[in-house]
Image (tube, rainbow, N blue to C red; front, side, top):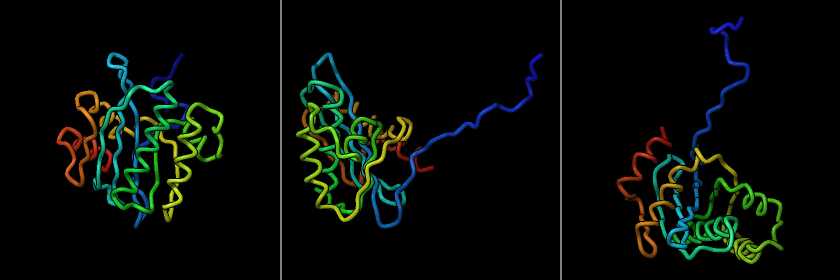
Length: 176
């Protein structure tokens, strides 16, 4: 006979987006593939230590050879975006374990995206502090929404401080 009032056997861990340490920024990035148009969307969200939006980016690109190629190009664009808006102390987060592992273990040079990784390794030399972290998809919902937003826009869209109205509830949900 089963006891319906008993506690679950394992801990239930909810993972949420967390703001970065004081005096640093967090940049989340994600990609979305749009097979019908043979394109991919890139989404980037930068927040300060209070969880306030500093900037956001949404853009479409021609569809690369593989999902890992898309994620590597998205990481590259996120790093460039952070640099362009003047961030120098940054934690970069995404839900692509392949790309995070390649960057943190300095591997992947023989992959199709190896040249992109090489470019990333040069770009990050301009940062005072940086870290690459893998996060679950639930911690990357804002960047995911920005990547999806690229399907309905031509070129690149950038927002500084004022982010798109449809993205605001996602940012507020992350912070609270």
